[in-house]
Image 1 (tube, chains in turn red, green):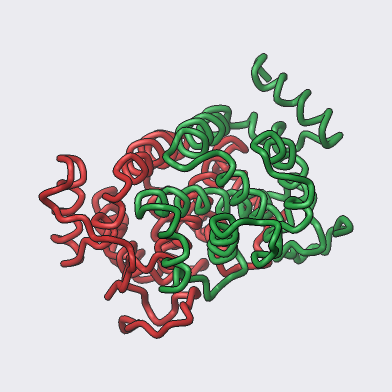
Image 2 (image 1 turned 90 degrees about the vertical axis):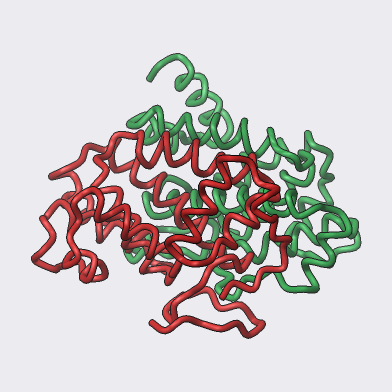
Length: 194
Length: 181
């Protein structure tokens, strides 16, 4: 379980927006550390959900299925249990199948279209751990068959914020991690099973 | 490009003699503007943490990440906020006596948030140091800004939009030439 040092703001002290996020977190994860800690700076966590998600992730140039594939792959690259559970629910709601979710770490799985395989490969390049990440000429060609450069840039910004966010929630210790999580704090914390 | 992009292009050319990030960002003007207006105006400069502290955080991250473009771009703003040349020169030394306790705590936090620090954490000791100067809301704000800056650094490297120093942790397999540190 998360072992954060930051104050957990009680639900009763949250505004209506954060209470809704708190209730969703409790429903999906039976834990709402992420929201309790974010509520120390409500304008900041609301900015993440309202500005980033509305304008870039859902409100940008890229179709929502591609964005959910990008996000689910990053959640698994980063080993964030909290992200995996919440993102899977959103992915299913836009038509991504359980088979696809089960193969989210396989860039070549035939259950994905060529378009979505290109997105999975791009997500791998953007992951926190990939210190050799690049948009190679081959990957650019693969992406360009389905996206223009504005859409690729939009996916880059979305993946950048999601990747940075993952780093933040690991450093602040506000989410449960899988054994594959690349960020290993020096003080021992309980890990979830892979 | 529209007039606003052209102004940014000209400013970038004057500073770096290169405007690749602007040229590529112009493929998706709304996403680019979101970063500069949505993030910088609302979060980085519009939040509950003072500008000097934010500039210190950003300048340290630019060096942690070895982003030559970011270092050049961030230095004038850091000077404007009150950071001295000696402090800029010592930005990678979180124990340097040229920084006060508050600034040393911010530098140590920035190191935890940097891409290559895979054991990054807000330890009890660092939390205690930060709490002498910031409340939990301000620490969360610092973390969110560092998160976006760190993620954007990763994007700049993956899309190959900026010149890197030898210290850059992201090494393209294509073995592109690196700038001197």
